[in-house]
Amino acid sequence: MNRSKAEAALVWNTVVWGATFVVVKAALADVSPVLFLALRFSVASLALAPLLARQRRTSWDWRTAGAGALAGICLFTGYLTQTLGLRLTSAPKSAFITGFSPVMVPLLAALVYRTRPRVSEVCGLLVATAGLVLMTLKGAAEAVNPGDLLTFLCAIAFAAHIVVLGHFAERMSFEILSVMQIVMAAVLSLALFWWVEPPHIRWRPATIGAILVTGLFATALAFTIQAWAQRYTTPTRTGLIYMLEPVFAWVTSFLLAGEGMSRRAAAGAVLILGGVVLVELKPLNPRRHPS
Image 1 (cartoon, helix red, strand yellow):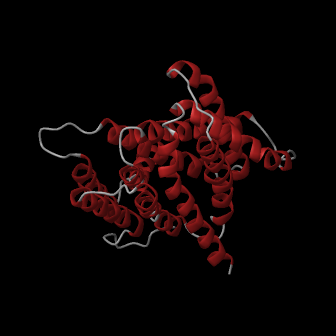
Image 2 (cartoon, rainbow, N blue to C red; image 1 turned 135 degrees about the vertical axis):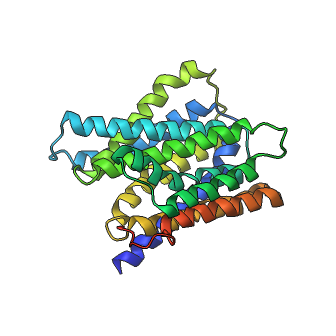
């Protein structure tokens, strides 16, 4: 029962995250990207303040603070490059390229822990890379869309974020790590928004709604749900569930904005999903996946 509830909650996360791609893209017409992130993470930090207060008896030290800060830097970098990229590419393409991050997790982990990647992981990376090229390159003579490149950097940052949390979560309170990473992302956003670009915002209802939805539901609530849900299900099943995120993003973008994909881009998206499946399920590896 707990596992079913946990996985249903993770599906809800994918619905929220998938839907927010088109919400954020629309909001960026009225607010500068880094200022949007500063407002989003500030709202999330305030919402999670009670959770932090409940953990006041937990031992705090510089190692925990450093781990949370490192995770927050990765998280901020991921959201920054994703948000900047959304101004220059479509919401469905951004969602599918962001979904490339699970493929990169085993490779980054192999570098950190000095282990050899498995056959399925290498094949999955090659298949997903082919899909990424097919999805982003329109012709041999054309350069990659800058928005696609920024979103690819976002996928690397999110993969690094997963590796960092995986390294520290077993020995530290994940609740504290979760709160601290969001606070760190808020601090970085507030410190940078005023000089990275000319800040501007039009306080329209849609803009305020986007800040509240992404701050409360897509950040504060979603990370809290994930922290709870992963106690009852495996990382592999979590990764497979999160593969639904770009699907929901595509559906939401089509329904709300009429924004779809060409056949070439759709074929590339299928290859990316296929690469993620190879990495997560590891069908080419004879030994059982430890997760």
